[in-house]
Image (cartoon, rainbow, N blue to C red):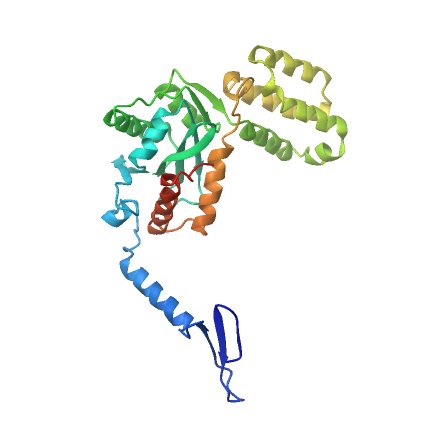
Length: 322
């Protein structure tokens, strides 16, 4: 033995010309051999990696760790597959929530799927991931299909899926689907996404250096990004006042704001005056945590589902809150 820690013993060969070394645990069991055996068993139990979005999901991957139903829906329309995971407890939390949040992530999507989309229910000011879907696109029809499936299961549970407030990003296809499915709901875009979009335009227009170095430019841009805090009826007048005194360097930015945020997006969508929860950062926070748990970009679908099953354990124990 060359040296030892509490958990690992380090061994080297006593022959001077030999560089061989091995590591064992405190019971002198070979660590690498043990890990290799575990990996071999894991590979034997893991299904073949799918070569397309058309594959069968075995029972092991359609149930929770404690063998409850986890695969909620698996539908394919026009070669577009939608897979939704949720337990009845998660669904009940979602359908009883007056406010919901929705958000997508692309890094965690397995091959053959475009995004992982989650719907979160807000309960007592806290966010719970309630439905997690693998989507093969971002069209309004795909989002509509997701909402229709959730509504079907609300009926099964003798509940309603009629949220009063919805927070999301500003994806046009999603906005269309939400407007058609939940006409009674107040739909608000995420304040963080709004500011992020405006600042990204500042960068694209080459104004970022002036934003950093010029107080007048920076103050005007910040006032522009604060218009969403005004009462809705005052937003347009506030914008015109800003235009009247803005430096000429910002003319292209102001043109963009007028054409996109006034003509293509309803002011009511990005205005957050008197809104308690102004961002969907709770949903994004869950995605960030989930991505770290997966620990790789675009994991295979079996690794994705296995990690998702572990997340369900957190929800079941009341720790799925964000």
